[in-house]
Image (cartoon, rainbow over all chains, first blue to last red; front, side, top):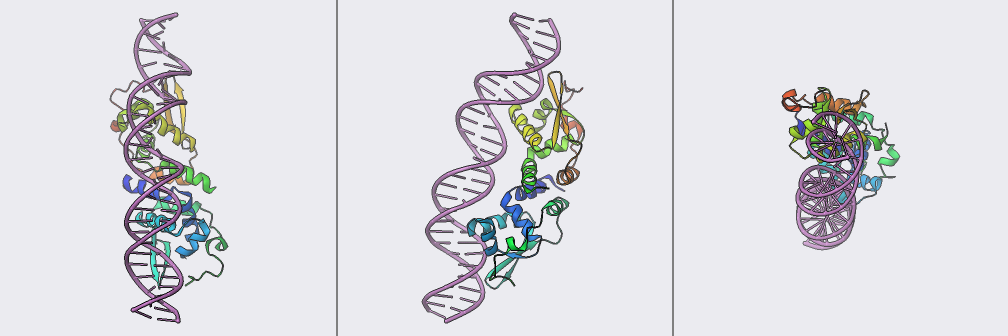
Length: 104
Length: 104
DNA sequence: ATATTATATAAGTATTTAATTATTTACAAA
DNA sequence: TTTGTAAATAATTAAATACTTATATAATAT
């Protein structure tokens, strides 16, 4: 594995908000709107974090109407997989706002 | 494993120069003076990188006269161990300057 | 078509990070 | 004790990062 890619993936993970996103995604798909509630940051901030994770090959997206659902990619590198394994899964209560409109 | 510690260790590793330091340390102890040659950055910059790795619990030091030798800690967390495993060991030629004065 | 909703992008700002040079500390040798 | 060498710390600066608000895009519903 190339050292440049290792650096890119580590940089993508080395942020408390993105780690929380990944912890939520352990549970399955989540949409952007839910993350805004969970992380208490603005919607554009969430979008930017998700983009960074996507560019590092850690997550992918799926469009569902006007929503977008994000999930972990199927084949994670061993480094990312190890981080995912170490992260406590954050409870669904914390990952999805109550009665989230975007539950597919 | 606490999410704060995960973040700290990931931040410590998420830098190309510190990844190179860790790759060198796979081979065994190296002293600060050698790293200056390898990374082509100033001695204080190397010291600061080493401090960050030490504060994240990734390396320890050993004083040898006026030199300091750094090495990976014995019990790495699974995340750090996975990164170490993925890193190509950089050849000794690149990790120690020729006839390094600080080879203990 | 118009309005509404979800998300992305753009632009600007504040904070953090990584480098530099200068200085200090610690040890060794003369 | 003075001199030299290795490394750490301090102070500063430059670059990268993570937010913000404002705006644009895309799909849905009226």
